[in-house]
Each structure stands twice: as structure tokens, then as C-alpha cells.
Image (cartoon, rainbow, N blue to C red; front, top):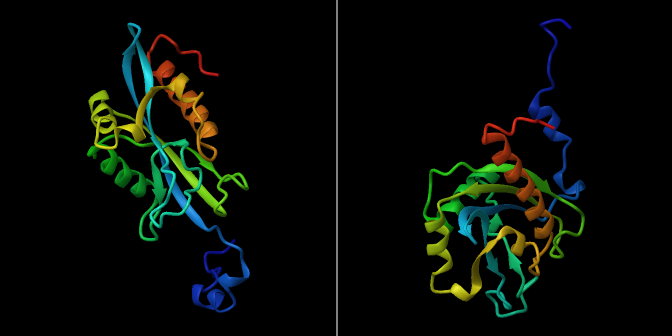
Length: 187
């Protein structure tokens, strides 16, 4: 390959490109598994914040997956990345800004969201318990809960959030095992 080899000029390529010819996703969301470790029956246990989806949407019509529990999340804006959207959501939910967000999966199974072709990038964050307790005790406390992870898996969960929780749960468990130092049997 010679150094003088040319690359295709972007403008030339764009002349023949028509975005309308391709079916594109209807939405891109960023979902957030907000976890913390709190005592349960005397031992440290992973807990997760879930939000109950309201029965009606802003227009007063039946809300998709209304009444089920979901992880916090929202649509990614055109001018941000999924990670920036996750940082924004984290701050909205907990007012925390400096917590590491760990991406652990992209959820894109056809039909995962009945509203259309919606792809989700999922992150988890481990935050101090008081941040989530404060959030769960807010005005709409009935609609927000902090559950032990094992209990969360038994709840009626919206969309494919059960798969998401299971995947996050195993990623977090693995991280804890690997960081405890004496568990160094890598798979």
C-alpha cells in the first residue's frame, strides 16, 4: 500500500447517500442500573433503585408498560453520547456527578420495546446508600423503591429490564470478586 493512496472524498461519497433508503432505529436510550451496598440481615447486600412506570403518560393516555418497575433511563439527545446522557440522568436522579459509570451492554433485541426499534446502552454505577435512600424517600416515594437485587429480579419489570438486571448483577458480582484481592481465579 503506497502512502499516496487516496481515500474517498467525503463530499463525493455523500452525494450518492440517501438516509431515507435505510430503516433507522426509532430511538436510542441510555439506561442506568443505580446500585448501592447496604446491610440486610447483618450482611452487606447489593440493592438497586427502580422506578415504577406511571399508568398514564403526559397526555393522559395509557403509558407503555405502565405499572411495572423499570431502571431509570431516558432518550439520548442528538447532541450527546449515551455516556453523557447517563451522566445527566445520574445527576437528575441522585445529584451526584463524580461517580464512575460502567457500560455493561447494549440491548437491541427486536421487539424489546413495543414503541418501535429502540436500542439501549446500559451502564451501572455504585453510589453511596444515602443518595439512593434520599431519592427513594422523595415526594413520589410510592413510585420509587430501593430493593435488594435478588428481590428486584422477582418484580414485574418493564421491557427487557430483567435481562438487563441479570447482566448488571453478574458484571457487578464479578467486579467485586476480582477486586477483593483474594479471589484471583479469572475465568
